[in-house]
Image (cartoon, rainbow, N blue to C red; front, side, top):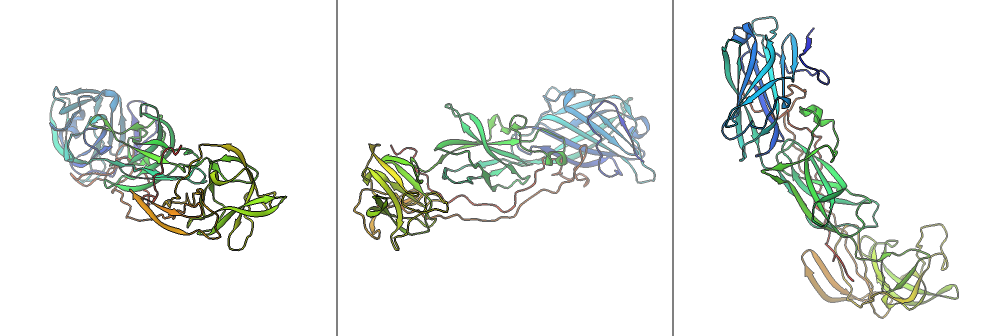
Length: 498
């Protein structure tokens, strides 16, 4: 049975890795694993029978991080030490003394600890040191933390060298579009937060800073950038700028503890590398319409209305209601491949209207109830003008969004495609008779392997214990998102049409 001795009060009891057999490097890590960043550094070392500190005890632990990194900002409150053998000592009430150049940190324990060795000739005791506010080197690469343990009389064991790797984070967030009428809204981004973390999507204030959280995603520990889809359902109702911000988890010293957490923008820390916030801003466009075409509603002349009650690539007529019955056709349009369209009321006179299929004259239900009739499924156009303009109909490729835009045109039984077309960026516009703008819904899904680093999980250790090896554990751990989703094939609509 292993006894636990707490030299100062801490929350919970944490177990170190397996027994060590020599004074050597058991592993190192930093979190987050990014350059020129304030991180949690970890060094795991082991002592063996016959070492000076086994007989006389450990009074100080000295860490040498080299000239590229710095421990100048590390205080006693930032350091946690655990010594494990037959007994486990957990210590966070220490005194620290950084060197003038910030390359070395001397940690003095509150009292001398004799490392508890297990039984047998190959047993040893493991020493783990974790320290916050460790500034990593400014360039990506692999670096070392040399550890030395000393007795009260000044005898030393070591140094033993552990290594860690830092790499640049990535975050890209492209302009894209969503429909404000969709129940599920999602946006795509690409991110890499070495060691793991989160990306939060926020609205922006007038000066461009982040404001209200509209969605977030976990980001895996992989150093390679992956594609992520963020659910923003119900949070995007108009065209606006959103900012994506990378965050790191603040709860827990080890991978395993961080894995169990969830994103909290009030508690977690934005990722800052070299003094710069890791973020990306994009314009997210919604449909340029005045509302949704629904039964029983009144619309002014010139309003642009979203129609989503149709079938794919089907021709529809806007039919007058005369004396409570279907009358003459006032206009027509065609839906896109996703069954939606944008209907412009500029060509409609004041009156009551319904939508019918061109091919069979059947009435379209605008309220999705069990009753369908000219009175129940009609809408009214008032005599009031709303900035009505006559424009060429437009074909826009979008995902689960727009379709047919009506313009002043002579009603026809079937829309006739014209040859007028222009391409702007990813948006193709085509002239279409019958006041229609059809949009093709296209979403490409791609999948790439999910990458997680070889990590083990404990609060005080958790890092892999390969002698002298680089440890990827002890970094943040977040359940990796599998099934990478490609960017929406969506066109960015104009921010204002009026």
